[in-house]
Image (cartoon, rainbow, N blue to C red; front, side, top):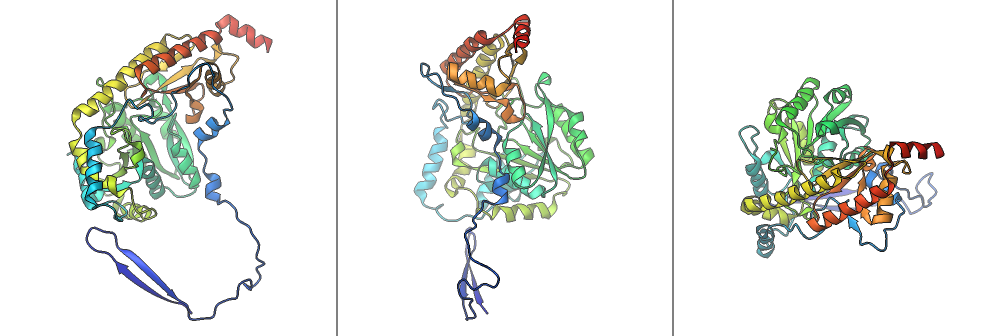
Length: 455
């Protein structure tokens, strides 16, 4: 029989550690003599790994196409604001991290939910009378992606379902399917600036529905919901008693003629897990600092969801401690003009892109109101030589060396997504090439009909 000695070490703000010592007292089984087992190699990938599927990677990796060697590649596909070097973070942000690094005080393990002082800083930053927050309402995570993963894992069991926007960020489906959770897609309406089809949404709810994902501002649409529309969404969730997972990583990244409303500020009874982080607003996606804000006015989540998040957070022992240590300074020292300048650039780029693409026959862009994207409809009847948006974007690469993500990646065929974070001259060049491409392949109603008859 084996005996165990367990020793708990820890003090101050640091997480306690378990030292486990195993002492064997005999009665061991000789190698190769386990009863009924013939040793052989049989190493297989887990079922979870087999169920993990990224639609963007699957589609992009299948696009076996080379760009035009006579034209420099312009990629409008990657949602990384740092990719072109024209949107650096603020000096106060980098200075905060340098100060923490030089202090040597944040090199050890932190509590898995984050340092108490850092959780207090996030709570203070987002606290407001309509949606009060304290440190215990904040879970720090390794980026917003992990925040979404933890929120899904605590709310849904295998065999249950979640409601996900279409078009929508592909990670929701990737995470859910790997956990054995069914995904039900509710429609967004391009003719209504990508508002939710509320009737369709409510029709999808059943006894196995675990949560509703609301992404506002939106990736891939660049849309921003009005206060009245958010109230309508909350009314559906309230009637159906479905909690909300709010992906608000682009929160406050809205253009001057629009206002961002955190959905929790409008809720009186619907419990909400709001996921956010530093990645997009502070332009540091590689720093992997995110958070979950727990809004539970009526104590519907209660201790069970909080305890569940705590247990799940212990799987990787929290996010980077260096960035945690800099959080308070980042949140409170970043000057307002930094946010304003970033949004001014994005708004200018969005207007340029929208105007240029609107003038191209066969394309119908939907004007964005925030975030870093806009969606463009391809009037496929005018491009009959292409089967779908994937073929359209493949040929755009091979002929013009411009890469846009086909919206099939977001469960929305016959559109493509454009990222608007690149320098102005690159946007103008890309739009000029897209115009040249469309003029080359566009067929009027009569021409398209003739081509169909020839097939």
